[in-house]
Length: 546
Image (cartoon, rainbow, N blue to C red; front, top):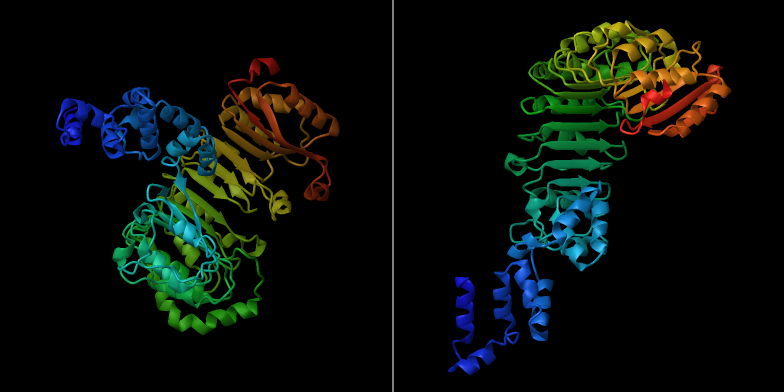
């Protein structure tokens, strides 16, 4: 209140008498003074001021149109909790941004509550660089940016928005090295850096530029020269890197294979999660070509391989996902196996290897699972090998077990030749069980009786035909089940009965149902049905279906 009185005194002090002072105070005449006063008032007081007269109403409206989020009375704004409540039901920033189209007030409130992710290109360059400083720009996506970027006196990107709020940079194809270098040094608070489909990489000198970088993604499709990639993997070091995603196209180059593992070894002190995919595009390499690749580099790289393996022994990962090369475990291609076998405190693990009966025994799956049994929470083994559940018998914290490609995939036919052994060794606390290896009816019934699952995805054995009563049995005994997906042999009659049961039962929704139409169903020579249903346990009554 003292501040308001002082402003009023300053405003009317030039006037000699009371009449002229009061006339001078009809200051809707003085916009500057009026705004100073309104700035100290609550929302209710500002609304009352608007009712005084037309001039005051115009002054208040002008004041409201220029407000920032630091204005005190905005804390009392009635719309604020309403908009927050609406935005809480919207999953993405894109959907939340649509609230800005409702009205000016919604636009004003929402734009300070969402994260903007602009795409910087030659066409959008001027618009992006001139975005308002008050907007929260947390990620910048860059592609097709060939024009020279404007620089400030420090040699950094010149823009209106707050560069310290940007936490993630994503580079796509079409950005020259000069522009990449400018952008990398211009965002000191960056925590994520991604090169997606990019064919050029930049190494910036000075570790002080990446003191906050915790996640790095490299996804290379194999086009262009790999020279800059090898240099990046060999020289780049990030002091606090915790998560590395290396999705690289292997082009018969053992140096690339080595540098990818060398990069992981160089960050052994900080890394907690690694995703390594060296063969995203499948290519057959003849054995004679493979031996030539190896022999050229054997002498010069052997000692370096040993040093990388020693570094793996000190690496303590919490999450590991590897897509092994088809010939991993042969000749010099053993670093990926060494990385997996060296870990003893993994919480999440995912391993895929090309199916090969002649080299099945080379995958050290049992050793890896047993070493990490105490800490494992999530296991994903998307390959068609046999699986023995005694390997996970001691996993007392295991919550998710996924064996096989449950979403379909190129190996679906091969799973019919694989088996799951000793189902009774599965830890009882598991909440999600997904398998594409076929289960016998006895195995399914043991799972239903002894586990309480949230998600259950299974393939029935070819000789076991299922019916409506089997589905009801599963639903009645699984009290927490939210998602049920099954692929089983059954007659067309029972397929239709199950569809009708799902349609007429409250709390159950069928997202997908197929009978004998998919290609691999026909190839297997039996009548199979696939269902994907979700259960709302607050609506579904199990007593009604017993």
